[in-house]
Image 1 (spheres, rainbow, N blue to C red):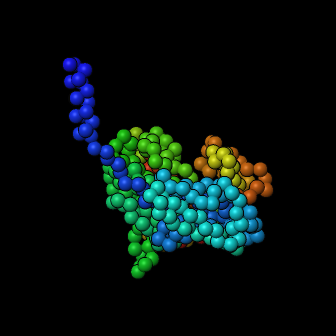
Image 2: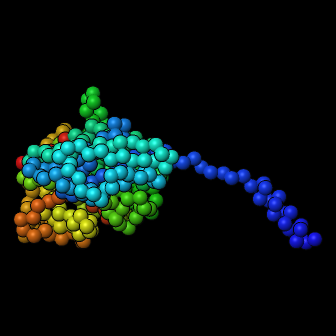
Length: 349
């Protein structure tokens, strides 16, 4: 009798369970696509299903194998991205979603001139993420980033677009009081990406992967800027320091091992650091120094491990551009209220 009762209970129990299944995914996007040796960051247009990649003048793009491709979860891509393709003509990749719907993505590779510029270096394009904006047309196509993502969780973002006139914008960066654990949060805009992990309060740089693909040999860079240092220049513990806060604008040309991205070598360096108050728009130009910096160069521009110096004559395949409203913001040193405006970054050849 006991066994019969148990059996009846199981029948009733499983009879009450309905088979629920989520619908199959309809996502069929290419989220990232890179080719070895490309001269600048990939741009992905999800509306028109176009992927554009630039190479430097004289590059051979007739036999390339993609070095990094990611697609929507549970989707499949054809042809196989481990196969070598002739990218001198548009190449079509079909991405098929879990539910069977497909999208044909066109990869266009262009061989540019010998004097490449960075896209959106006038900071006119911005896209919305939740309650803040980021530089670029979209998350998938932009290589400019900020520290807005972690700040927006507990505070207001401190890097924002500001209208100059009409459709002309610039980037405004403001050092603010930190929401918790540390004293300040310096504002920054840079080439690279803020990682998805929890923000580090001891080493903010560890949350950022710097750089974007690039191939060129500029002699200098220029940028328009305005700067006003905050009133009280203090260290991480709130001790008042002599002098005043400074803005930081620097560019690194680097050689990155595509098979081991942590292997980064410095090819050339250019920088501008100043605490001078500049209320009218001014243009600064800083020359690149190729190879190791000469004796007497500031310590703050030396490579930070694991980055090392590249062998003489090396050619860069990545560029790192950084703007910061507080030069020592990485060490939570600076002045609340320091404000840097930046516009029209240009590489000079």
